[in-house]
Image (tube, rainbow, N blue to C red; front, side, top):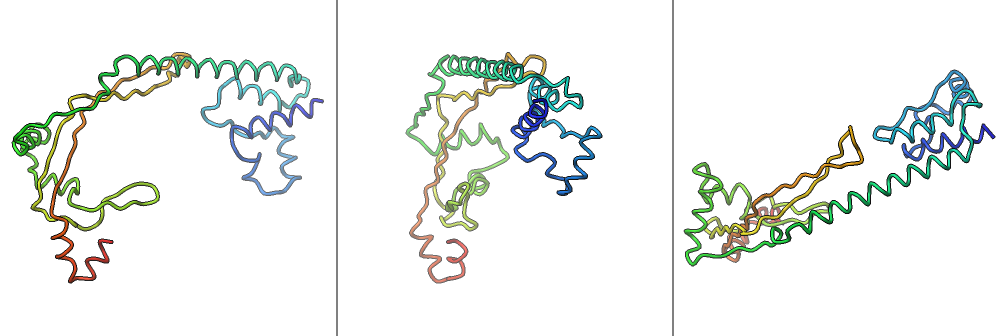
Length: 228
């Protein structure tokens, strides 16, 4: 029946919105019925495929004779599903080719020099120039802080727990990892564009005398409370 097709159109809209129709209206059924008779319909959800929008809008058309038959609805939905599957396979194939392009870029390895302090100073100069020294880098990245595991992430503690007279060690990895991302063009959604980003990775290690730091805090209960 044509009324069933209307209900199916509302259901198709509800699948994209994730909420019941007219949920922002009061539960005055008489008012909603009157508004529907005057042409009120739910707004389309952003980023919904145009063909899908046109389908459910046609299903809830004011004129029952314009509404599609159930076999036509099934045919359109099947075509849309086939297009989605084809796009996913094409994207997956492009991704598989990209990650197999050159695995050597993904190998992270670094070499240590005998004079580590000189190497660290050289790397600091290359990355930060003259704007930061080693002590400023330690404070900037809070390398002498503890780590607190929260529900969502790992963050540094509020206070310093390792003495600031520790040793900073920085090594640059010889390999450079690749990061791939895809951008769908509005003009042609069938051909996603891919961007490859290469960026250097550095390992930072800060060694300090943790035992001395704890000993200095033992006499001050308030400090320990703030730290832990």
